[in-house]
Length: 96
Image (tube, rainbow, N blue to C red):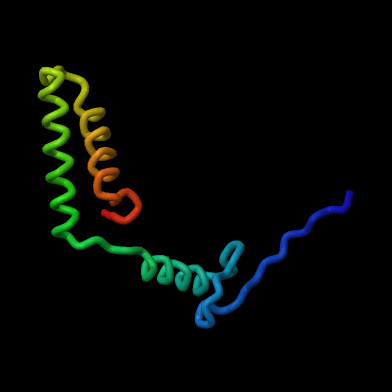
């Protein structure tokens, strides 16, 4: 069986290609970090706050429905977060 070899491409980010493999120096590492930050979507703070309020309200209603029994707060929040994100399609969009 023939040994497989990996091929790495190192082209400049200016031409739109992405470097693969580990950075070879500090400058390349810094450039990659800047590109990653530039490509990260940032949510409107008002949208993040509104999402947080919706999650808090849903978590409260979940806690209320179980009689505010101690120990379920995290599960209430996580389930509420999943429900809010699923209902608004925000799970993959919101950063923050």
